[in-house]
Amino acid sequence: MAKEITGYVKLQCKGGQANPAPPIGPALGSKGVNIMEFCKQFNARTQDKQGKVLPVLITIYADKSFDFIIKTPPAAVQLLEAAKLQSGSKEPNRVKVGKVTWEQVEAIAQDKMADLNAFTLNSAMSMVAGTARSMGLTVDGKAPWDKN
Image (cartoon, rainbow, N blue to C red; front, side, top):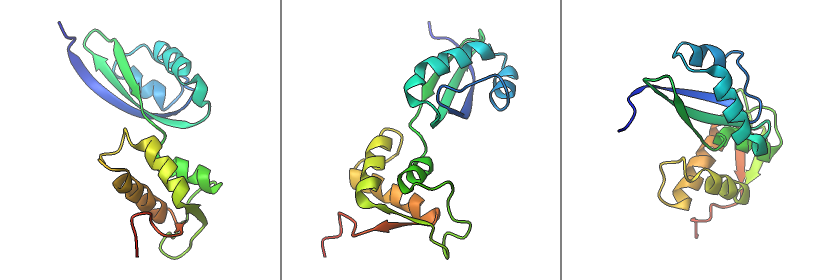
């Protein structure tokens, strides 16, 4: 028989660096989850993604047990990495702070494809390019689907 779900918690943690300090401790402690057990499991499963920000969806059951799904890093974090920047523009519509190429956008879109609600690679690329523009990044070149 399936376990009864009592709630969900969404967090963003750095890979391999989860600890009981805020924000993880208070979020899970209020639900009655064993915080140290979550930290050990999360760190073990994210050893290869050391230091990268990873969204995690934790499903909490009635018997205080839990399961979690680790998603791909946010597109904004990957774009900053690709552009070699610390943060986006404070005024993205006026001040452009960096550039990314369509090849970089395509690589990020392929990585994020499982987590995006897009059916084609072109639509996923357009979503990632929109994120880049809203951060004050310029996407260099012509979009692959623009033939003229």
